[in-house]
Amino acid sequence: MDLECHRVELTGYCYRMLASGFEAEDAVQETFLRAWRRADGFDVAKGSLRTWLYAIATNVCVDMLRSPQRRALSVGPPSEPGSPLGAPLPDTAWVWPVPDWKVLDPADAVVNKESVRLAFVAALQHLSPRQRAVLILRDVLCWRAAEVALLLDTSPHAVNSVLQRARAVLPVHQSVASRDLVVADEEQVVLNKDQVVSSRDQRVLDRYCAAFEAHDVDALVALLHEDATMAMPPFAFWMRGRAHLEVALRHATACKDAHLVQVTANGGPAFAHYAPDGTPFALITVELADGLITGTTSHLDPRLFGLFDLPMSFPAALRTHG
Figure 1 (cartoon, rainbow, N blue to C red):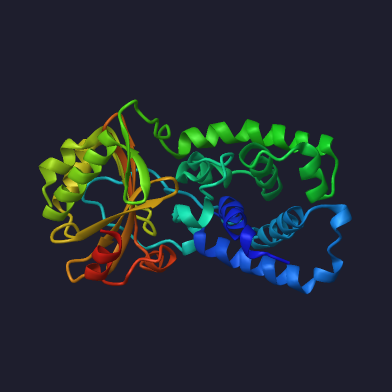
Figure 2 (figure 1 turned 180 degrees about the vertical axis):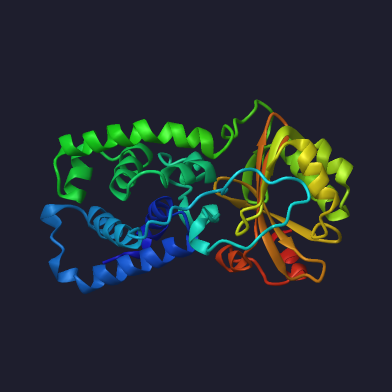
């Protein structure tokens, strides 16, 4: 059985289910392990290898989702400027970013980058595991109701009923989870840092990088939407509003003399943030709209550098991704 050819799509499926790249990779490994152990039980007359693997992956994810903990992008009311970060929340409280190349197959025209946006993945966490699986399979992966019914050992009518309930829940939470997703403008689209972005957005990102590394707060603030947000998981601390963010940025010490390397995460731009001594500090995801930054999230977990296959020192990162 050739299982590896299904790794990327299964990792993308498990990531949307679990909202963690680390857990998604674990889920796929467990899926492959169970598949090898049960290879004698695979019957091509009952469905394709792909469908069988998705059925196993669904069961693995459901098992992993038995905890009542729900992952989110931000927790609690907005923080006030000058307020302390507080104690970090557990890893399981957060939706974590993932590199595109681990969850999106460039050859797959059906699955688009919007389906792994952090806001969309966070919204999925408000659905039950079964609703989540049905909505991803039907609306993201475009499976037919009969195919999903076979996978879940139920009827097409039951699948459509679950899908209807999931669709009713999702828009409410998606609007709460984040601002509108990025809409590409009509400017020339260019390939940069392994990501397709508009030329206008790339100029904004270049200016952001330069201002961040120089700790030029005035330049950073000029790039922000008036209702921009800033978050720093695993801390519940997050802010909304350009004026509040300006106060926070003027007191930030992690920006000065830092090093940023542009990467791509969750279908959008991101930066690997290295501390002044060149060690990993954070993975920053950036949201843009209308030529302005609408939100930044600094994911303060150096383990993400390993997930993204980023070097653990800045000079090496510059050679690899610069």
